[in-house]
Image (cartoon, rainbow over all chains, first blue to last red; front, top):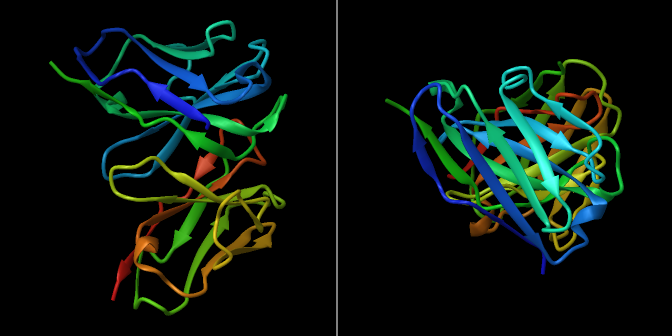
Amino acid sequence: EVQLVQSGGVVVQPGGSLRLSCEASGFTFQEYTMHWVRQVPGKGLEWVSLITWDGDTTYYADSVKGRFTVSRDNSKNSLYLQMTGLRTVDSALYFCAKDIEEKDYGSAPFDYWGQGSLVTVSS
Amino acid sequence: EVVMTQSPATLSVSPGERATLSCRASQSVSSNLAWYQQRPGQAPRLLIYGGSTRATGIPARFSGSGSGTEFTLTISSLQSEDFAIYYCHQYNNWPPDTFGQGTKLEIK
């Protein structure tokens, strides 16, 4: 069974930093591109970032570029999102999501999602 | 950035009836369009990808159609568990991937 288990929610002050994690099981993690998608509670979905299956290529939404860094450790079946310079507008539920296609260097539909990590940026 | 526009924002339908949801792209996304269902307190669930291919385990009452800029998700006979929010997602012109704002399907 495919599972994506995310780290818990947290409250952080504006300007602060935080690292989210997503641990994968039930599939060959090292063969799939992974994504981060966020959702303000009660609002829609916003794509944040992707990292290719080999970790060589990353992409970011303009809203987080230069502040967020996506990484992965294929030996630990884990995906990370390092968030710095946090702003109140970054407050959201952050989901990790798995690409449907194996060894894909682009984007593709997301066939499995984590349960979400609630990030609250507030003083 | 491709802007995805879903309509209507809210759709009220009775159980057993058909629901038709629309998604329009600001430019062609070919057939690289997916649909997701999100129930309260849950992560999104992939229903349809490639415009019309049902994801694994998705019931046949869900169907997708369209290409280019106009797409439709049809639920042929609504069950109680189908009342949720539905999002379309284009993965053709990226980054960034973009989502529609969602259609809330509610019980009439």
